[in-house]
Structures are given as structure tokens and as C-alpha cells.
Length: 92
Image 1 (cartoon, rainbow, N blue to C red):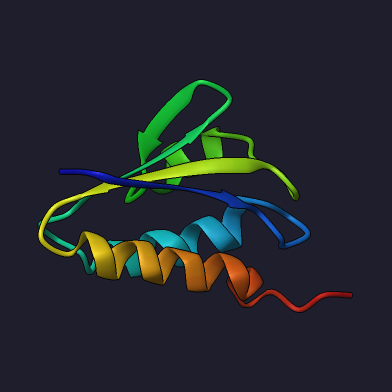
Image 2: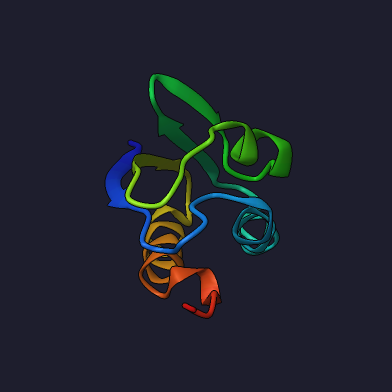
């Protein structure tokens, strides 16, 4: 059964190039777990850089993450930590 959770993007650039690249690199470690991101009615593969950046999700955007597979708990926790830590971006 899939897990889904809503998040607010806290970093200043949203799912721009660097945060998306960091997410994809990390999420590709969850080989047997499907990870999708939904925003504004569009659902994309969370392991695809082009797909994530195509969402156009900016700061304060509410996104939904849907995970399904044997590592879904660990994956959702990892995503939550990355979002809460603003993808490691320094705030200016």
C-alpha cells in the first residue's frame, strides 16, 4: 500500500536545479521503491531530474509525495528531512 504525505517547500528556490539534483541522487538509492511527486495536478517520477524540475514548484509550494515499495517508510523520512533542511541550501 502506498504512503503519501504533503510537504511545503521551505528553501528559497523550490525544486530548482540543485535541490532536484540532490533529491534524484538520494532517491535513486531506493531502487525497489516507487517515488512520485505531485504538484498542481501533475504527477512525476521523483527519481527523474527533468521530471522534478518540470513541476515548477517554487518556495512555499505544497507538494505531495507518494511512495510505494519495501523502503517507503525510509524514503518518506529521507524526503521529509531533505525538505526540512532546505536541501542543504544556504539562506542569504
